[in-house]
Image (cartoon, rainbow over all chains, first blue to last red; front, side, top):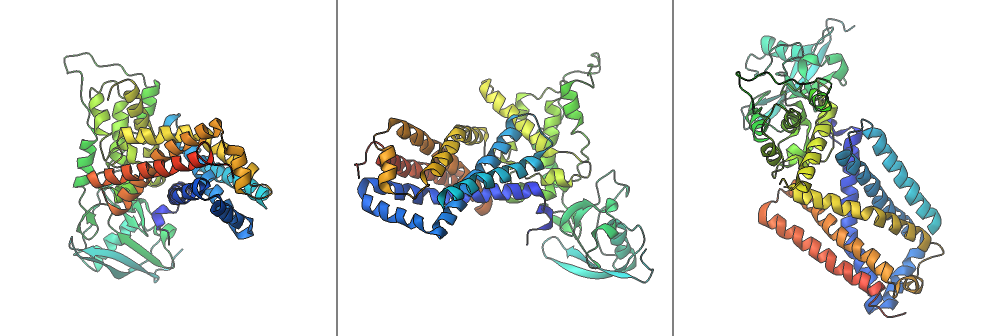
Length: 113
Length: 242
Length: 114
């Protein structure tokens, strides 16, 4: 399904970074709108927040935190790649970034359930 | 060791420049065979109208670069045994370049971008001046040397997805060359080159996917070179240069 | 279609957000314990100048960062460029800025206690 010239680790790192960025950008307006209900309709905000008691919602939140964390750590790797002297360990750094993202979002999930 | 009667199924891209399709050939599998051997066998034994390029056939000119099973490679340096999948092989012209005929693509855009990126040496001395002394151990020379073995085969250009997505993007080879010249104190292009690599199709479009470095047969790393260019353009802004 | 200026804006907004993202994730891990409620959240954020500044800066940086990021995706996926691409980028950043700052206002200085 993924074309043959793309099946290498740093390409997947790029894909993960792009998809996480896109999904976060699409999520933001929803996030901002819900939070601004604190101004106009706190009861509605509370109603929405009650959904977060559901396990499936907590798992979705875990997904969101993972997206943010993986975009963040992957972004750190890119900032280092572009502004610091070249490191030949890009694959290891990309793997570390993903691992850290799982660690952080996993901590969130354990905190949430 | 393959027996002499074993035949493989080879799909080869045929095109007149505008319309193309894969054509299937049955080719005998031989020991130590390269993909270039396969293409040559087809042209000499089955279809003399098959168009393709090669020159040195020993991995130093880059002319025979093609897409083999979807990956850009030098066909003279690709052993069939390493890439044969269920007795099948797929050969196509390099990606991201217009096709002239069959497996031969038009390299004009590739070289135009080389020039546009100022991958061109601008001399600062003449034959009447003393030869400029360059210390081979100096950091700039070590940096330049790491990237100068490019033979313009366009494998990196074919591998790059930003080239595919952005027609203006100068591409890994051109930018890599610009970086080597930026590290050459004999070159006089200076700020002009920084401008050239900062235009709409410049180095800032690189997403560090690193397919270029993954596929370069000379093991060059355009991703690192482009990162160097990005650093230089940013430094220039803070120096008030741009 | 990314020139040095836009590229630099993208990287600078990213750098600004490094401590903000870490802070936000830490806050979320803390806040999500024992469930979320408007009362609990607003109790922490209402009238807080610190949270207003923290999230205000976050919104500013993310409006720039997300707009430029989407610009690249739109240009590479749909081939848009020139004026329409610039208009789209500006529109996204202004839109995010407006609704983002409104949310910050709602949670800190402007909102009423629940």
